[in-house]
Length: 457
Figure (cartoon, rainbow, N blue to C red):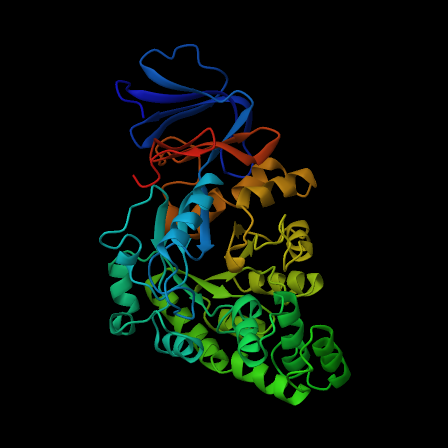
């Protein structure tokens, strides 16, 4: 990128350093090799012997760190241990993250091996991708109950100890939408079961409504008494010609419930390992899991709990705020995910995200997966700024400096624009931070003017 030059210097842009407070109307960021050499307010008068990036009209940010994503590795997918995504899908997901400003990503499917980030023969990618581990007996058993088609004998034999030795940066995701009746049941497993039984395709929102009508929002059977609602719902989507209400109850229960108890037991296993190894542990946070999470947090104070996607759609906004507050009192870091609730809104709405931001209860922000429909982290950041929920420095910190502090093994050397940190930068348009112009990873350009530059570097 800067062949023949000693330094790279970014000039004429605004600067947000990632600490939650610092903003320079105009600043200078100087890089040497893969490190940040200097960050300061003002202009640069001497650019001799430097490769110059003119960021006029833009804001210079630390590279975005996404510590809860799926679909970006070539191994078993999701906590269900499902078959790997197709190679072209993995490449597409990686490119989407990189083009939206993400420089470091933690794939939290949890049951893949570390060498499945870049298996032999697969193209490497300039996005810095890492894996987590959830290789405990209960988590693997839960995966096998719901799917497990991506798990080989090798994956069954993997241990948390071996995964950490191979470079896993966190534990989890403990549980998931597949094993704990969450979003993946709505967009994948329940629609597939209904299609197989009836030949009728149902929208994920309908699948979610059917699930809650049968099992209740907490999967405790509270919806079982509402027979007229279930029958009307089935009739509205053309299912009554194929199944009666009793058959639908059986289908939903058989699809959703088998892995739940095992997956919840896996929470305790992951918490124990987090305390043992000192690694952050990501937990599937939703209404069906919250009571277990609160107990785990109360009885395992040394566990470095990260409550993933606390804006989960199973919560009402009031519930999301209440339970996030209770988890934080017990020492958990509170993560929210963009899901598809910022712009796409195919299944989810932004109410829970808004409520948690406005209650000052959010520590980090990620994308999760949302069936591949996730909105970008910077689109959520821009929404927070536009709605005056947070200042731009405070919003950016949720995806940079805060993530580096929460996941030090993953990103302790990045996430802030300061001397000595790794030279990961995202340069976005001033008036819309989600419009990413340039991205640098380790001081090398990965995105230039919105186009990938040798993403398979």
